[in-house]
Image (cartoon, rainbow, N blue to C red; front, side, top):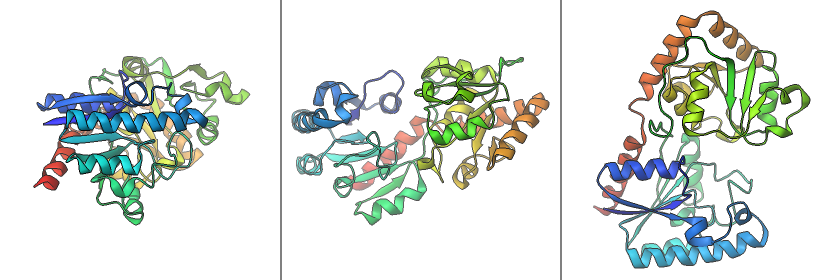
Length: 331
């Protein structure tokens, strides 16, 4: 089977994890890098102003030509931020099944999550895969042909498991992008030997700035931080509530003790207090941290059970789900 994936050519990216999974399953899976092969503008420029307009025009034309020339069985577009509805329909007219897999919330109006193209294109996809159950009905409400819940997963190659350190260097760590929402939560834990990495934390207030250890980290470096942390904090962005995020699987995959924002969906994926810890309030966040630090054997037990839960929640399994939908639609 020939699969053309559309996204970003990065060593640690959702697209890369899926491409590897598809290839392990024996398929000819190739990547069309939207920015390099299509838009031909830098990623940052391509999200705004005239760069977005010109890049979208070039990208759509190049993608259509790539599908007409290579004739993939399946076009798998990640996010589809700048893919136009007419481009999708032309690709489908050429006999190609077209799926979108969106790892973001398409109803989030921020420029990195949405665009003038993303919602109007929803009815054109043969299937729209989304990570949050709460978004499925919203997609149908705006005309989706088919919407499927597809949760995130763990990639053991990108984020390898490591045995937790016997003597953790960090009591509490957080790895993720800055937002005012996250800063409010982390500010409540700023006195708990907190260590923060991620994009944008140079904008944090003075109370947290001294807790910032570096910028974005990925792959093995992320796994190293999780290994060296007694508690790995996961503060869900409001646009991910009431669902989960990629860290929900990556943290236990790496072997860490996850302390996450409570949502019903996370609690359906992992057993609270058995496979992860959760908080609803600042008080609960602080209480859970203190309890975990005071009970090293118990926190290692919970981390181990969390890891056992995600061992079979890999991108190989998620890719198999996508292919099942393809076979069902193609008959």
